Image (cartoon, rainbow, N blue to C red; front, side):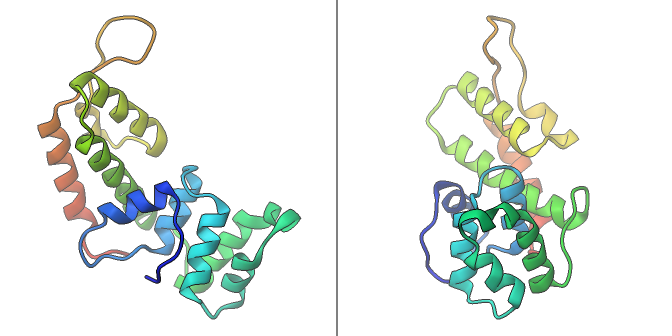
Length: 172
């Protein structure tokens, strides 16, 4: 990947990708769908890659009122660059979603926080990127005030991360 300016979410994902693995179109599409990646950040990545296709170049050049068409242009560029696009519920989508989920969980796990605060972080990740059934055991609610409460077991989170990393080895 070429060097380019990155926002905090893309930096987080890149920091937690397995060694030798690269950021891909699916990661960008899913990251945008989840609200992590802004159009400008995706456009900078596309421009830095210097993709030759018409749809990719059009995506990189969108500005002003043209940004209203950003999502359509993104889907077109993904199709042009990869030959197909991942769809919610499809295997490629799920793998990209897992890459985001793992990166977010690794970041949360590395934070110097209490089990209760980690529980709040895990709950926020549930809400951001969805929750597969095997992720349900990573957080438990505790009775208390109306604010989110709960705790997380760091060992369970690490085991979940390791399982998901094995599932996503090899990219897309």
